[in-house]
Length: 79
Image 1: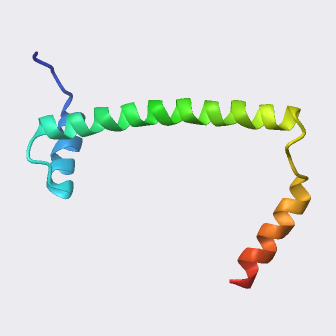
Image 2 (image 1 turned 135 degrees about the horizontal axis):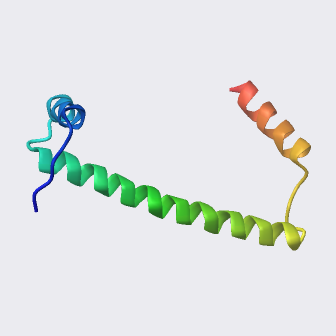
Image 3 (image 1 turned 120 degrees about the vertical axis):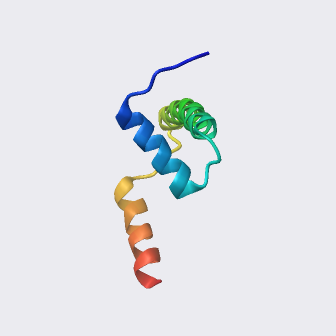
């Protein structure tokens, strides 16, 4: 496969290689793609967590936010 990159993209890749120690442009692109895959998985995990939270709320398994935030403020202001 052959790809054409803009000068700006080439510069970004070169900067990443120098700053982060990637041995090749291919390694930079691979890391970027892996990061995108991870973001996609996290988005799915986030949506699943929202679904679980909504189900808990529907079952009445929740607490008043003022109560929770008060506990958190007390805990973290003491540290």
